[in-house]
Length: 128
Image 1: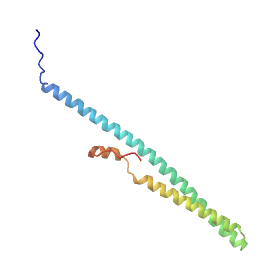
Image 2 (image 1 turned 90 degrees about the vertical axis):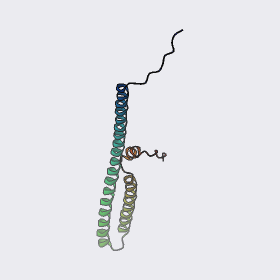
Image 3 (image 1 turned 180 degrees about the vertical axis):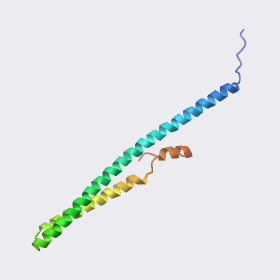
Image 4 (image 1 turned 90 degrees about the horizontal axis):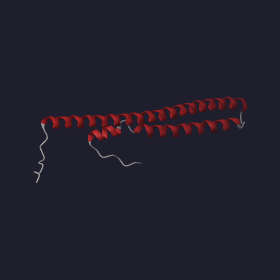
């Protein structure tokens, strides 16, 4: 009969090596989460900048429409062109306000929320 193999306790070197390996994996996991959060933040920034650009174009268009409406109104007294241009300008301002609301909604969620949540030991939020 063969003697039963007894399980030996790991040596100090093995414990330290395993601890270093686990620490290295933990750092790698946090680094990956940081990269993913940075990518997500960059995409949100691109959306925010795009919305701001479109809103700026709409505001400039509205301003030009209001100026054109004032000029046409001054020339025509009672012509329908100023009303039509003023309505277009107001609609552009409303569209810019909707884009501003959407931009603020995007900007409320801070970048690196997943990384901070993980480091604080909180559970992930359910997808929306």
